[in-house]
Image 1 (cartoon, rainbow, N blue to C red):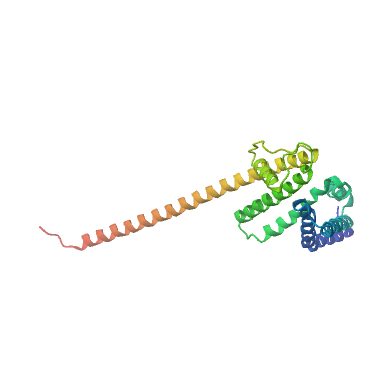
Image 2 (tube, rainbow, N blue to C red):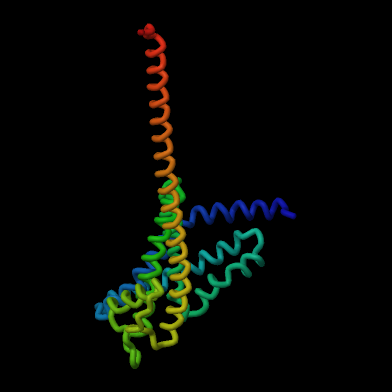
Length: 249
């Protein structure tokens, strides 16, 4: 049973979530830049690499502060701790740093809110944005893990993107495959997300096709009813004209 204190905490938690959403998006984008730039350009000057490292450290601190604030504002702190284990692991385990890119889901949420009121528009924008974001992050993560590893076949960003496309579409040519443990973990995550995205895309296309057929059928039926009504009116007028003519021998 909720108490006044719990209700007040819940209100503060919701207010903080609403206010911090855009800030969390900015922090996640900064993390993406600081993480991806050294991977895409391994020959960056030392000052730029240092700046990227500082950005990653600052965003890590920001994520930590955000976690503590959400934990403090939560009306049920124990439940929040148990239901947000990934947020805590992202802070404690350095090997899970690439998974912080999942915070960019807030970008998708903001874009989804601007997609209008139609469900099809929201789903289409979300699927497209999610596919591009997950694909780019996976390409960066697998390239960072595979580059320089013995026997690695994914050594350039182009090869990483090709591997992402063949994996996320479940084609799997096998010409490029990760050989490191980290790369294979990224592959597993991409496979699972790829199956989900393919299912959403298939469902969206099926829904769009059915809506188009329904709209077309409805328009054709309406046109047919209008033609029948017009013919009926013409027949009625002809009958009236015939009835008005005098009989002829």
